[in-house]
Image (cartoon, rainbow, N blue to C red; front, side, top):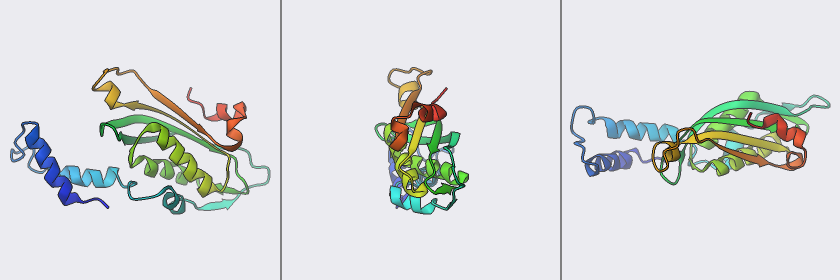
Length: 187
């Protein structure tokens, strides 16, 4: 899991490497704070998609003729694996067609949150959420659309503050049925 002591040592070294004094008043506790933060925001790193599906896979019998279940605007954030930069203002839309089971709505948000607590690229995050949902809800019919802002594009490099990235992951009937895709598309 997370080695907080190693993180503290390395953060202290980074502070020195950028020309800061890690012993000055405002920075004395920063290595410890960063280690605690990393433990929280990277809690999903040690978990497989299967383990996340098991954690949040509580299901109930679906009503007869259940139609698509859609949860929109699930707020998450993550960190880009290329720059360790924040991916923020992310909104995840998830939909699935029940195949005899429905999953608790809060579990869908928890799946998105835990999958985001890894070093990621947005494309993989969508694929991971879809894979976890397929297992947890026991259905092949899942769609995930994510819209997010990446600080590696807004705060550095091209510095384009209005750029948003939208990714789509469709499985099962969501691949062919545009009316199902429309249920979760970013507007």
